[in-house]
Image 1 (tube, rainbow, N blue to C red):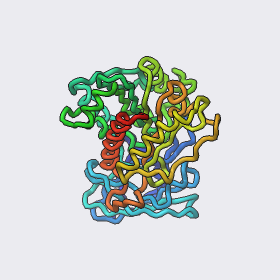
Image 2: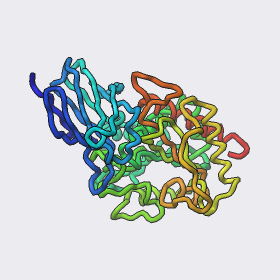
Image 3: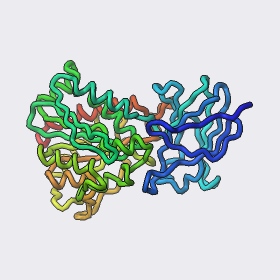
Image 4: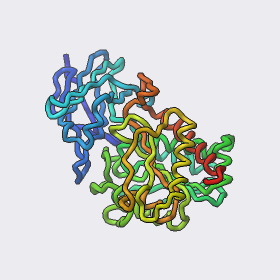
Amino acid sequence: MNDIHIDCAFDSGNIEVLSVDGASARLAIRKDHQSEFAQWFHFRVSGAAGRELELKITGLNDSAYPGGWPQYDACVSEDRDYWGRAASSWDESADNGTLTIRYTPASDIAYFAYFAPYSMDRHHDLVAEAASSEGVDYKRLGTTLDGQPIDCLSMGEGETQVWLYARQHPGETQAEWWMEGALEVLTDPTDSVGRLLRQRCRLHVVPNANPDGSKRGHLRTNAVGTNLNREWENPTAEKSPEVLAIRNAMDETGVHFAMDVHGDEAIPVAFLAGYEGIPSWTDEHGERFYLYERILDRRTPDFQTEQGYTKSAPGKANLSMSTNQVAERFGATAMTLEMPYKDNPASPEPEQGWSPERCKMLARDCLASLLEWLDSDKG
């Protein structure tokens, strides 16, 4: 029987084919350009109908986050619309760490990815649809090193300045699925949450802060290997024009509330990280974040507060990270939202695990929580 074919020469594609034997293949993940980060994969298998595929992604002990592979199942789609999960197993001792994906496609083509991809074409559709909605202003904040636009959508008549931005780390595609859900709420004139937020706030939405890394199939960096979420203290046009453009726009508007949307490789739940340890920290400032966190925790079982990152010690916050910098620079209630690649063990969904659909639903819960936070005395 003929060998399968594996391709990745498309938007966000990433894989190296080491060998193919019938319906089995040995693979590796290509590192981000000018960087050591490697974790994101996205490739197509053809010639596969009715055949049990065995795809071994090797060398993963040297990936960016080896802790992301245990209890992880790869994402798979045959129509590039619905993304399910393919049974996957992790062996730390095989070939310097190997994830083995097994799947039998019904059709001749199947796509595999670390998480459901969010293409630049879909991004442009999202921006165009939102920009054509009543009351939405579009602004091109600048350009990336590859010449792509940095898109921002602004809406609302209120005084509270809200910034929502996503995908500084391009392989965290959960973040732009979240943005799609958020924009659906904010641009729908019949949605009560969106309507009230537009009355109370001026909202600025950057759906993709790293278009170059997204298109190139990077996990964590832009076109020149820069981790954008370590550039917020001193961004430059040469290394991080994306951050420079966004921060300059924030300087023009001011910021009262900010959410930086991400995905976490190892922790299998959604959680928030705040700004403990910034030089200007006060308990009153911190309580504004904790209040929002409590509201979101109450509103949805797809969010929790038991697992998350270690809080920074007093005065030890890393001001090159956006949440810390924005909280310090503007006195804002700022936060990082993290979503999983794996399934939520407290609320599992075996067909899809954590999915684009759940990202979008969490976005609505986040915005409803923001509305409740605004209505509270401390908010």
